[in-house]
Length: 400
Ligand code: AMP
Image (cartoon, rainbow, N blue to C red; front, side, top):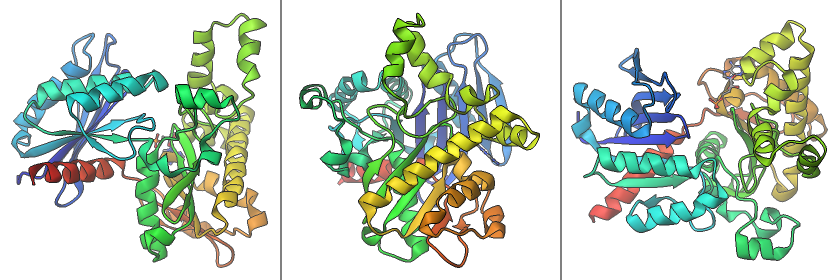
């Protein structure tokens, strides 16, 4: 194995996703997930060479323990010596980080300072960085921020209509997330449209468990649906997206909720799960709706309606539209949701090629629009590749 591997890490509070990307071929040669960390039955799932392996971890194992087990596995597979850099997904970069950064003690402390804007996310990212620094002490580590691609959004789009001092003094504004995915998809869309990226105008819907839509003008993000946190915007797996902020007050004052319970309700018990009273998993929701489950159908209807409204509104900052692009687990696989959303956008002249829509699933990119109207494209995202490329780019400049 040549020395060209980048170890990509994405740490959540109780999980850790990882991939080993070969920077020469740009293929993922190993990937997996450590989950239920801190619980009585944490486990590690690894995919390598076509084989899938599940390893039970000791009760209470946290990120450091999971990474240590992973390192032993990489040694066993004789891959450890080929790793030349570590790339970390960091959720919130605030206004400080407009691009990826080589992690130093100073950068880590700046990421820590941004944590107050993302208390549910950044602390886990920092834990992951520190664990990786222990396990791979001699390797350079790079942070790639979900917010960075959205730093080109203009002030009139990122400011809330709150007292200006809350922005100036406290940084309360819309930041946007999924930037690494929106960035990657924009580059791919430009290639498929045969246009230079800086002349490409698209609306990109990243639809996974978390979901966001971004308006991209001349290759740059100019508006996006997530806000100060990843709670704003679209209906998501368990997140409510846009709601009247007064509902918070109502729940606390009239229904006796604590603030922690409200945060939990909005983030973990709402969205597809909350409406359907069944599941946050879009596949299950679609199957149940097919079988006549009214809640599942309602969840799908609300999901598509909100998404179509966002896409329609993002024609405002664009003026000119080359394509609507679908990505993320739902966007890449659900022909049903794509067809419903394009039907809701018929005022713009969208049509759909039903066979092409069925073909563009399970990792296959493709145009799904009919012969008239604007284009619609499905593009599988690859955030790990962007992180690996940035890790290589920043490491190379370090060596010069
Ligand atoms: P992600 O967070 O990008 O991994 O996306 C996860 C979401 O994609 C879940 O809601 C899955 O149910 C959904 N998903 C994956 N495959 C399909 C499929 N074939 N049809 C509908 N939704 C899917």
